[in-house]
Image (cartoon, rainbow, N blue to C red; front, side, top):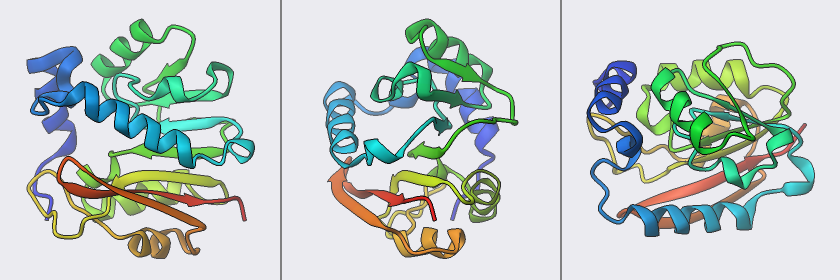
Length: 184
């Protein structure tokens, strides 16, 4: 069960580690990052994505997977957005909670760091009647103070529709899945 305040947690980490925040405790960062990117690219429904809202984009580590003209990166952490803009100047980033003009919601290991009620609120606000691509920890045995694994079925129940595709692999010692819901 998650028992931390995500904003306080990430603010502290960005203040301590800056650009290296998301990889703070991961000594295999370059290899892990490469594996995740290849895994994601292989499963994207590229002809059906349109403009993508990368919810919780952090420092923009996965922005390059998307065409700059079809990308909006959102994160509530201003420090993360500053880094993302510097590293990927052709992509658009914002801390505004109001995003318009996107067709696909994408998250990458974001929802797993939030309590269930917050995840439900995020999906209710940003994922209805759109293509949804979630890459999250789906290992339900992971229940730590900062991460909770949830099954594709759990996400389907929250979205109110069956998942169209699930691609899973084990990385960083836990099952992670890319779950895809196509436009209804």
